[in-house]
Image 1: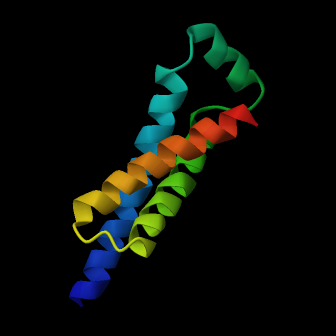
Image 2 (image 1 turned 120 degrees about the horizontal axis):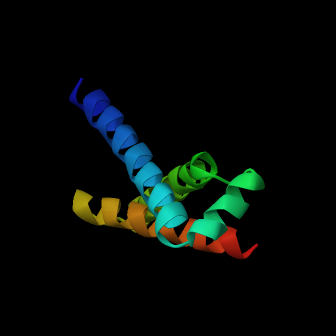
Image 3 (image 1 turned 30 degrees about the vertical axis):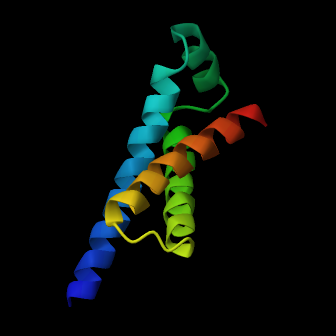
Length: 92
């Protein structure tokens, strides 16, 4: 049972990391006008949050592949993965 609890907790944390990073990148790094143009094109908070969630899962699992032991490092990899995914997604 503890493995299931840990897995659910990790899943929820990764989703929350992705949402927070996505919304921060959408609202914090664009001007007011830039956000309005992005929302008019259909690229709003929800889209950024979904891309952030995908990036957080990728970053976390890359940390697992690299065998980073402290869980804090895995969550830092999740944050870095979400940031990098959103930055690369914006450039495309």
